[in-house]
Length: 92
Image 1 (spheres, rainbow, N blue to C red):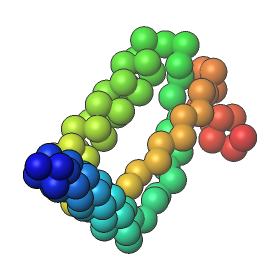
Image 2: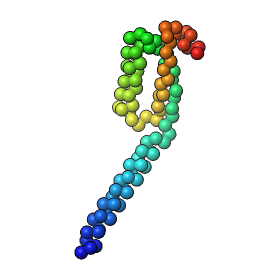
Image 3: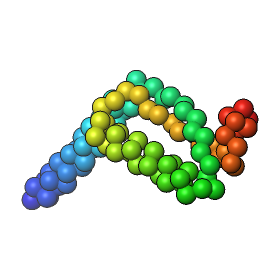
Image 4: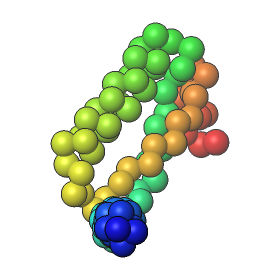
């Protein structure tokens, strides 16, 4: 009688360990070979156009990667505020 109640518990434990390892292996295989590309974005964040542009860029990038999750490239955006002077911000 004791073995009959103990067997489902062991089976559940092994299933949990199997699923956890499967999820970890799947996550590791998705992250292998991903190349990061760093991209600088210069916008005037004091203007409405700059704020809207930054939001649109982030939404577009998020939508792209949610639709194409198997891509091996990843864009990392780095925002620089031009503070009204684009040339000076590009040189800094």
